[in-house]
Length: 139
Figure 1 (cartoon, rainbow, N blue to C red):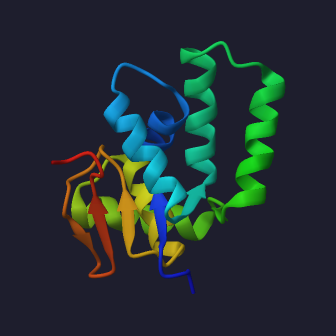
Figure 2 (figure 1 turned 30 degrees about the horizontal axis):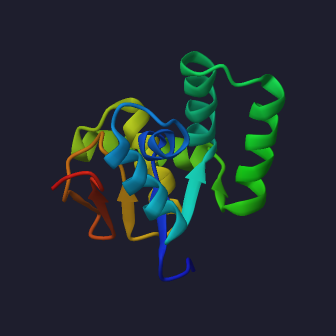
């Protein structure tokens, strides 16, 4: 069972926390959320973070390796497997989620967290009466 303050954190929230961009308020909100919770991630989230950092920053490959090591050392990581992919397929049919979003949701459900923080999906949507999608930047 996850800890009480465990939550699944999607890629966009991590990117706001890692890249000091034009929206300082979102960066502060993302950092605070991550520091005050027990974030859970998936291999997909780690991949998306790395590819975006490589595209949008001048991060070195050595730093990417360190970041990957850090994710696995600090946070629970949900590995994508056959069960996750089949669950994502069922979720796409039921909730009309995109392919990639359905995998994120399936991973969040597998992690047994009650909250998925993302700005990419419908704020307030409850999936299978177990998981609430929350946009941490919504006012």
